[in-house]
Length: 434
Image (cartoon, rainbow, N blue to C red):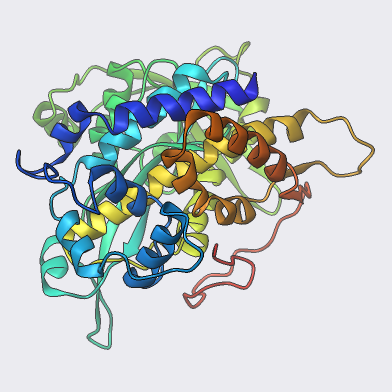
């Protein structure tokens, strides 16, 4: 059953992703990808989602070694030809393919939920970009006291921490506001979702937008900025209902975004932490019998998994090793990597489920080791999308057995003091995939 579901999703995605209809939506000109070339639309897409991170020519040689079933990597396509072919793709190509894949996954999988709600954590991060003039002008960046400038992009992701899929992600200029990025991504959420937000997101207009779409949320309030958070701590109560009123600034923003300015009734909850100030959470979940305050400590900690996912993207997938120096090239690379990571997440979804429910004599429970899984997915993606359905079924069967061995123990209760101002670089514990 597991095999059939996984193979069905992949074969259905393959059929739709490489169809003439999808091609027409992804190419810039009607004449693009009409001739028979070595780098046709399907081959180009497969190459870009194969976790490209080393030199472009080396990646091409290794790709066609697997693609053509050769013994040795030979120069079959030049890197300049790849650059020319990539120019024919719209920047919307991989976000479109990513949405197609995620929709299929949630249509066919029996996903994990929290009290009937799909958890979605959101957060932003920055990605360092190649230092060339066109990227500087488009994305902007950050300078330092030594007058050194680093081009950067602002990324916001919607991540399902219980099932390990990225629902959507944005790749915008550095000065983009996270809250407005989230507002533009709300079409990826439904009334069956529960959004987890950190201290950078609270704003009346954003709460109004979520409430207007019937999207539940749990958001941490910065205590020094919100009077209702200070009042809850001073009262000594565990929770309270509050009614938020829009001030003049928020009213202007709501009017600009065509949002209601009506007062919003929400619930605030105090979560006491060991050796730290309490967290104050604000939520639309008003039913304290169905959603008791004692559940919110563990619930909000699920948001941390999006931080871990950013580590995977940066440290294991080396996403900042861009295979191009144009705005379109870096955008393609980012969204192609996110799509490839979601395909890998589908293949580790079933081993993860089995590990969660396994009854063993081991003292510790185990989870899939993401670095090992992603390493095994490189080049395997080529086989999955180019071989026959029968071969793919056999390949997935063998792959699932292999992934069950790619595990690491879960050690509960571990905590470490966060080291601030640490120098950037590859940490010894976050090794990249091959």
